[in-house]
Amino acid sequence: MVLKRKHKREYYKEFKIFHGVFDERTLLVLYRLTNKKGISVQSLVKEGKESVILSGLTKKKDWVAIKVYRTEACDFKSMWKHLIGDQRFYGLKKNKRIIVNLWCQREFKNLKMAHEAGVDCPKPLYFMENVLIMSFIGESGEVAPRLVDVRLENPGDGYELVLENLKKLVKSGLIHGDLSAYNILLLDKPYFIDLSHGTTVKNQMALELLKKDIRNINAYFSKLNIAIKDSEDIFNELIKLIKSKSE
Image 1 (cartoon, rainbow, N blue to C red):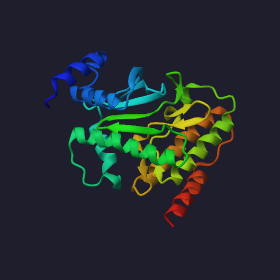
Image 2: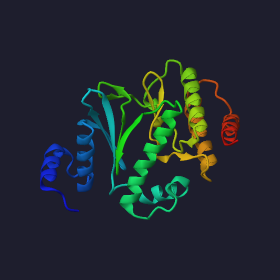
Image 3: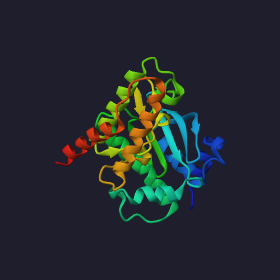
Image 4: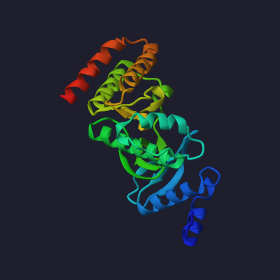
C-alpha cells in the first residue's frame, strides 16, 4: 500500500498512541474517516480481542463511539461461518481483510435496521472498511454500564424492557445472535449492543440463535428472584411476529 507522505505524517502524529494496537491500513482508515466527519478521538473505552472501542467528539460536541475491528487478531473462521449463512453477503471472497470489512458493514446494516424499527441500540452514523462510528450510549464520555455489572432496583421492569426490545428487534427481521447481559448497556433503559453477530430471520440458523438469545436472558434474570416467562412461550410469541412479517 502506498501512502501519501502528508497523510502518513499526520496520522502517525495524531494516532501515535495506537501504534502497535492497529495495523497501518487501519490507522489510515481511522484518520481519514474521523477527519472527514469532523470527529476528534478522545480516549480508549474498551479493548477486546477482536475490536477496540474509542470515544470521540463531533464538532457539535456530541459524543460518539468508534468501533475499530482488528484485522490481525479477529476470529476469521467464525466471521466467515456467520457471513456465509447471511443471504445479504452471498458470493463473498474468502479474504481476511474483506471478511473483517464486511463484518463491520454487517454491524452497520444491523444497527440501521434495528434503530429504524425503534429498537433501543446505538444509532449507526458512518463506516469505512473496518471502522464503525455510532452514537454513544453513556454520559460525558463515560460509557453506560453493562447489565451484568449493575444491581437493578426493579429487575422485573428491566426484564420486561429487555423482552420488549427483543420483540422490536425480531419484528424488524433481525436476530441478535449473541444477546446476553454482557451485550446490554443500561442507561435510562436497556440498550442492545454488539450486533455484528446479528442475522436476518431468513438465515437457516436464525431460530437456533433466537432460542439461545432467549435462554441467555432468562438465565440471567432467573437469578434475580423474579418470575420469568417460559422460554418456549417467548419463542413461540416471537415466531408469530416473524410469520406475520413474512405474510
